[in-house]
Amino acid sequence: MENAADNVKDFAKNSLRLVKRCQKPDRKEFTKVARLTAMGFLAVGLIGFLVKVIFIPINQIIIGTTTS
Image (tube, rainbow, N blue to C red; front, side, top):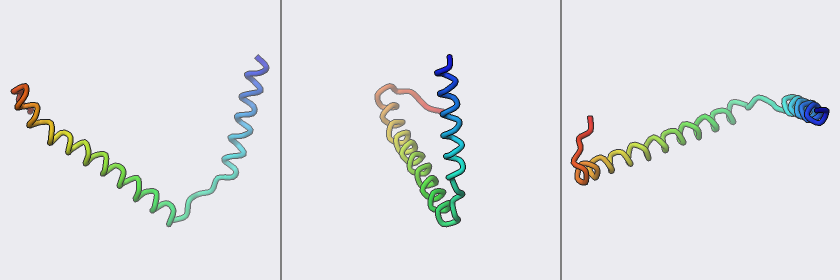
């Protein structure tokens, strides 16, 4: 039981040290991260859209179902 308490104390101590060392990003870094995140969202959305556009006609040909 003491080992678990020691682990929690060590984790809290290390977490506090990490938070003290962290700093807010400047405007340039923030815009870079935001732009890359937006590009990632667009890429994933585009891939999903293309997969759906490609497989709907294939599904209709093979199975003969209609989508709504």
